[in-house]
Structures are given as C-alpha cells and as structure tokens.
Amino acid sequence: MNSRRIAAVLLVIAAIAAILLPFVSATLLTIGIGGIAFAAGIGQFLRLGEESNSQGKLFRVLSALLYIGGSIFILIDPIDSEISLTLFAGILLLVEGVMELASGASASGPAGGLSLVDGILTSLIGVLLVLEWPSDSLWALGTLFGVALFTSALKLFSSPAEQPGN
Image (cartoon, rainbow, N blue to C red; front, side):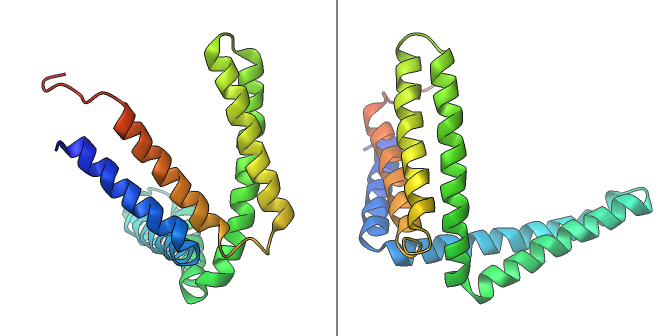
C-alpha cells in the first residue's frame, strides 16, 4: 500500500471520528487554533529585532499582544470561542460562496458549472450556519471538519498515484 492510500485511509478514519464526535473535534480544533495564535504571537515578539524604527516595533508588539491575548481567551474558554468561531465560519462560507457564484457566472465550460454548484452549496452552508447560530455551534464545526477530511480522502483515493521522478 503506497503512502497516498495510507494517508487516504487515515483521513477517512479521522473524518469518521470528527463526524461521530463533532463536539470533541470542534473543541480540539478550537484549542488548536488557540495554540497556533499563541505561537504566532511569540513569533511576532521574536521578530522585534528585525524592525528598524520605533513605529515598526510598536506595530509588531501590538500584533503580538493581539495574537497572545486572543489565544489566551480561546484557551481559557474554548467552548465560548467555538461559538464565535462558528459564526465566523458561517460568514466566511457565505462570502466564499458568493465569490464562487460570481466566478462561475463569468467562467465558461464545465468548470463554470462546477463553480456555480460549489457557490450555491457553500453559500447555503454559510447561510444555515449564520441563521442557526448559536444553537449549531457545538456540532457544526466538527461535522464540517469531518466532511472536509472525508472529501480530501476521496480526492486521494480517486486521483492517480504520482510516478517516481515526476
């Protein structure tokens, strides 16, 4: 079994876990985002020496404090953060769906039709998340994350394996 198939199987297992345990996967995803934001804040502090003027240093410090402050909020109360993240995801998907619709309307051929379908589905998911917020917050992110993992696995299963040297 090649590494592509192994990755696909692992993605399917992760997708099933995320879909069956959406609250757990959404909470872990939220905590992961908090950890990444904290690391980004530390990174901003570490880059202070690269700034040559005081204005640049000020903006670097403010950026670091914003990242670290946000990460602390997320890590202290991941459930409330998950609720906010769900609203953000809904708005993001709605905007992305509208952009896909615009792209599909201006494209020709089969790619245009696929963009229209993608735009409609993405917009619909975004609208549903926003309209049902905050009641959908404790399961929606985990379920959507699981579906995204499953879609990635399907792409790996369906695409031909790369030949060595290509």
